[in-house]
Structure formats: C-alpha cells, structure tokens
Length: 397
Image (cartoon, rainbow, N blue to C red):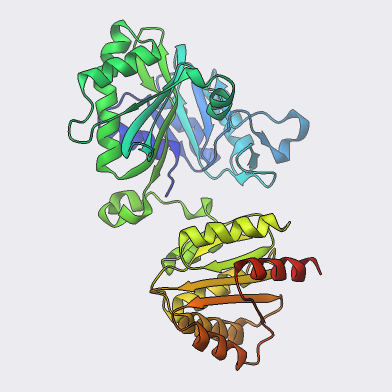
C-alpha cells in the first residue's frame, strides 16, 4: 500500500525526522489559509499523486504552457493561483503513463534554502536477506538513470537486524553522502530514526529523494515516498486509514476484498493463475509468443469457489481483455474448485472472449470433466506452452 508524500512526512515526523512545515489542501479555497499558516516567504505547491516525476510532469488541460506538478511560489497569491491550476486537473509524468492521474490533493510546504540534494532509500535487500540503506550524492535525479550511467555513485549499506543502525553504519552512510559537521551529526540521529520507522511500521520501501543539506548545514527530509507490506497491515490500523483508494485501480480494489493478488497491466490477455511464480511464468510466455498480459492475478493456493468466481468477474470486467488464459497447477488448490468457479462466473457474466484452460495436478481430470460437461465454449490445453500459443492465436484472430 502506498501513501501520499504529506502522509509519509507526518509519519516520519512522529518518529523525530526533520521535515518542513506543511499543510494538505483538498480544495483550492483552502490554499490561502494554508499558505498564511506557514512562515514563508517561499512556498512549495506539490501535487499529491501516487507517482514519481511530479516536478517534470505536465498538466494535460494546460497544453504547451503547462508547468510541472511541483512549483515554487513567492507569495500567498502565487500559491492560490497554482492551486487553482493544479487541483482537479490531470498530471502526466513518466510513471503515470499517458493517461496521467487527476490531482485531488495538494501539499503546501514551507520553502527551504538548499545547499545539496542527496538520495536515500531503505528497502529489503534480498541478496543479503537484510534491510539496507541505498544512498547517493546524486539526489533529486532519476535514480535509475544514475544506476545505469554511474553505478559507482550508489552505495548500499546493509543493517544487521540484531544490532540495528550502529556507529559504523552511520559513518559508512555519512562517508557515502559526503556529510560532515552538523550534517554528519544530523545523520547520526536521522539514519536510526528512519530505520526504526521502516521496521516498526512494516514498510517495504522508504525513499527520500531528495534528502537535502540546507545552507545552515543541517539535514531535512524534503520528499517521502512510503510503501507498506500489505500482509502486515492488519497490525497497523492507523496506516490503513491513510489509504487513498482514488489512487488505485478499481479492479485492484475489488480484488483486495477477496484477498486476491491482482495487478492491472496494459495488455489484452487476462490471466488467472495459482502461485506467484507460475503467474510470472505465464505472463512471460504470453509475451514470448507476441502478446501482452492484461493483468497479474494469483488466486492463491487455497482459493474457494467464491474467490475464483470473483477473480474471473474482475478479469472479464476489463474492457481491454480480448482473451483469457486460466493456468492452474493443482497442489493445495484443487482443479475442480477452479472449474466450478469459472462456470459460476460465466453463467453470471457471460463469456464474450476466447477462453483457454490448462489444468494439471490435484483433481485435474475432474476439473476438465466439469468444464467439458458445462457446454462452455472453452479451448483446453495440454501444457503451458500449448495454452499460450492457443490464447495468443485466438486473440490475434
């Protein structure tokens, strides 16, 4: 689950991290009071969407004269003017795709005197099985570009879970970011705070880009991108309250109600698979044969008939889907349960696109018999390779 920048900053501030004063705004009429509540005279008006690249993004409605989604304002009047231009309009960035995202929230923040911009993130480094800091002196930039062009400028510091952030870790991070004086002392306080927040709130990603050194020599968290482990949200009702469903795909919201792992993609072949690894392999082989998957959907190892029915309905509700591939390897999941769920869903919503089914494993023959006896217009497949070829051929007509 992702949250907005202003929510992430409030959370980090509660742990003691240094952030600027700011006020979230939901209506343009609130902008003037928000700016007047801040010290000024420099303000930053920030679009709040779940996507990066806001500063370089453009608003669709403003045409060639469109400015970005993060703007400096030198007066309260400028804040208000920017709020009117940004709220309710569609911001297109490298991460939103051409459709963009509508800006429904702004964050009016006090400006900062910036000396240097740094990059810092915390994530789970699966190569060493530990939480790790990833830092660079190249803050405020596209970190993927930095990693590609100058990988030596990105430093990873893995943290021993039994010790937490040690003095040696702080020194390594300060050295990597070239911090000294007050900034290095601030780092000695900030790095453990960020690690503590990451662990205690079950985050999957905490990215601060940029982390700035101000002209007075101190550090400040200037941006905050925070993602949480969905599987741990039951432990954090306070975090769950921060969820903004307007930023999520409607199909993904519906899938979450049934505990389905669903991610919408840009292709036209809907996939229903059990097991994340098999789902990834299914998407890969669809691409191998020249088509694109419309979704990642893992119904899980112990899905019920109701979950399978819900999954099928979610897939068929997507107008981009021109064909469906069901690929089930039954272990804990029984193939007959999948078959019953598919039949129930088809009877309810109909079947208007080609459907290829590959069943193997527990109760596979029973599952095939149930589908074959159903009278549905279904193409059966012998294996995954055969299934992928058949659904791609059917979609391409």
